[in-house]
Image (cartoon, rainbow, N blue to C red):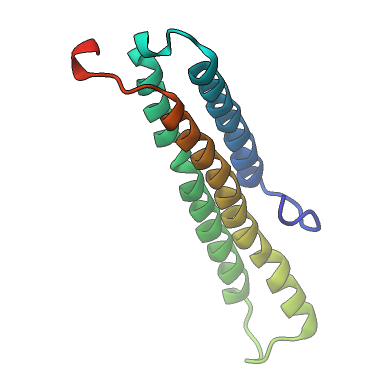
Length: 135
């Protein structure tokens, strides 16, 4: 992903796993819609596409949750120390290491959202229009 130098948190792995499963589901939906002769006879495909789109919107929210979690952890760790107002180099290194998950979770959430939205858009064009009477 974006940052292989930092350890992934559990939330990073959850985003990567969930985003990968959703991307696979989107690709399968696109292939079904593209190559099935009777895709227009199955209004459930359109409903499945809407559910997948809704689930894809959770990815950046999970990234935001990881960002807030890492920020709270980082500032809590530095709020507990009493001392000088100036940070030492060791404290700055710790600060950056604690702050890194805030960036990786956000990046992973967006990294998996974008391909999911693109494949969903392709499936939207591949699925024929279903009239409300057929649902």
